[in-house]
Image (cartoon, rainbow, N blue to C red; front, top):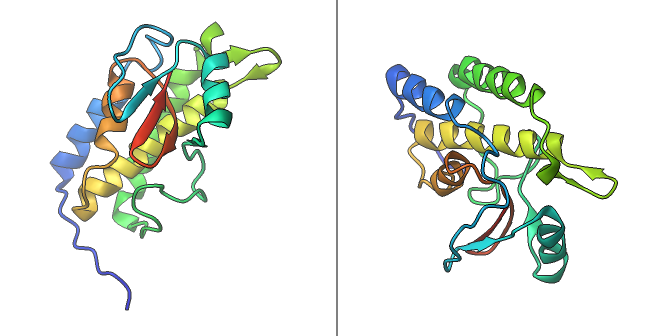
Length: 162
């Protein structure tokens, strides 16, 4: 039997969440000190993060619409959120077009688009979480973006953060 979700987000709440997310100064503190906790594994550089992904069984955070949500699995895409998702994507694409961050490059790898797309995915999923009344698994991810960091990978109960 399919799960039924009951939308709980009002238009004002969606607008407030959208303003909060689009007001974030994304990637402004990459590589700066971040305290290690039981659920956050800090990486001082992209090179260190890439090594941790391989060594510690982390998986990249999702970046595309077709990627599964690592916290909730498959979720419906309510049509009433379509305009909010488009607005979020447009805002983050504008923001990221001006970014030139050496911290997102490692050797021949330039991860600007991956970082941007992961931020867009996180924002869309947080909006969906609130709308469907789901547990706030994406809230800590958004909070890390608000601090200027990039939560680039996950493992059960942990986030790898640059």
